[in-house]
Length: 472
Image 1 (spheres, helix red, strand yellow):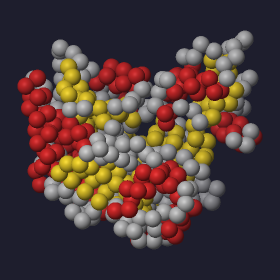
Image 2 (spheres, rainbow, N blue to C red):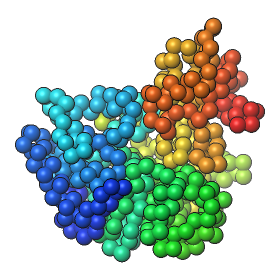
Image 3 (tube, rainbow, N blue to C red):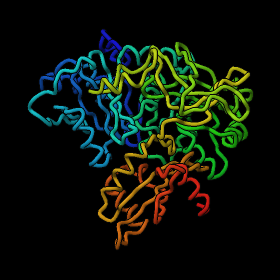
Image 4 (cartoon, rainbow, N blue to C red):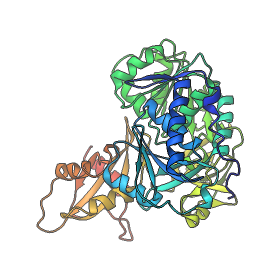
């Protein structure tokens, strides 16, 4: 896949933006944001940043985070977002892969190494490296090009029609592609962007009093609706994705916020996000589906040995594969993984889908084992590797279990070494000290043997049976 050839396409957003950005502590017009970005760009230039050099940017949904991203781009670098509160293991793994010379944190430029990282042709014209969960437990760096992301913003603006009259509330973190594109699109449209640093139902409800657009994931919505009637008199649109919305939550939104149209979005970081949309006008007829492809996106449903070719109802199904002009440039330093991710130019999503008679596409299962907990994607192998390092643990098996609030909860079965006595609570506390909160298992099942299938191989589906049997 050839790299983009015209870098910096996103840099012009601030030159024409007319809105403002606020966080929990500060507010800035786009002019002030542009000035702050220029200062950071000058510092990077003076430090000798090279074209297309990756620069790590710590983020926590602050105004300064956006200034840092634009500062890196204006200096000709590639921004690599890292959450300011990331666990040390996550931070170390990212730095090991990226090998950055510079890191921007709280407006300060920190030098991590004397020598620059090696030149990487894949980063030519790149804007971002966004890390996502890998099926082997090692995060993957998804390289996103300036031109492709800028063109995706064009397509999304046609769909969403943001304007200077909008106030967009964003509780999604800027380490995720969903949060990043919403922030950039809001700035480009001249809207007022409200960054929410830490999700709190009460705080978010308060922010919604003047909001016209909310970008969130279904688990956040379920939590808020679970705390009483929602009041958002000006809300005209809810942008959501990352997990299934569900008929019950969709009904709650329609009943309590009848003026808020829901844009239910499906997509992956690798494909440029938002490949499908169930738009408000199709909410009733398309319920239960991911809707229709967005502009520029094509797809096919390909039979796969891991995805039987028919559903119980007899409708054809198979792996959903997506081709998009807005997709990634590739995985950082992993050409083999990049090549394996595509078939005939189509990205293999790992989701099993079927084409409904009404034309809508419906997700009916997964081939890949990634767990979607509250919209956060988690590789079971990552959790298994972490817990396997505990001195009392002999075997670990992790799986997602359906959950009304989170979509999927993180369940783990653990077999202890002979004579060891670690409890489930102790193991959870051990995890809390080593990873992000959303990766800490919701439930740890202490078992004598792992669940297995007919061949004797450990079976993740057995964890769901275990959870059901224990009525958790």
